[in-house]
Length: 203
Image 1 (spheres, rainbow, N blue to C red):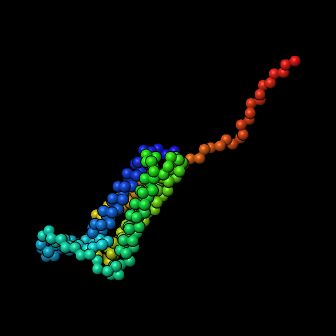
Image 2 (cartoon, one colour; image 1 turned 180 degrees about the horizontal axis):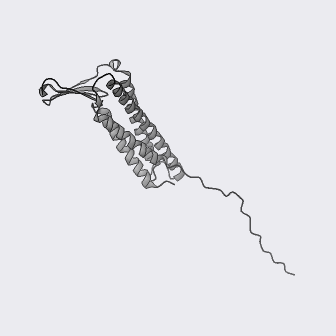
Image 3 (cartoon, rainbow, N blue to C red; image 1 turned 90 degrees about the horizontal axis):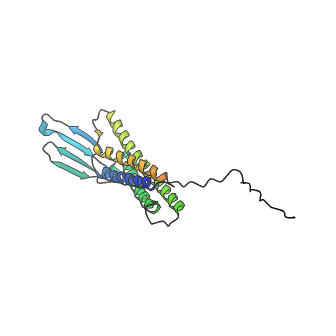
């Protein structure tokens, strides 16, 4: 049986990863670019996220605008948004299943083998969600790199690194929960021979 401490650590890391995924998805700093005019006063920093774009001026004023229509977004942004949502939903579902399969909870019955299988299933679900998030971040990063090749000056924003960190935390936590696979009892390879019974004959 897996150690309950390992399950608790995996659950905690997966929960931290989920928080990172949610924060990274909401933040607008996925793609950043800067424009500097003739003087420092006209410097403007542009942020593009999954849901809105923002402009920050050197005077401290920030203006954000939510995307009007999904049809106006490019394919990379649409795919990143969809994969991040799927990743968050899968991670939430995996954590919910983990609550029934962890040894320190009373949910899921008293069968230890059954609870271990539930915990293993939760780890697999969390791994699927984390994989979707990693693919989403990598896809968006590839889009930024492609923009650099055409002499545009975007660079990675902090939200992407937060989402990446959350995804890797979920991977580690999911692996710990998936390690709860029950071990079957090993049966002897050869049948045990019975000891001959000693009989005494009385004349």
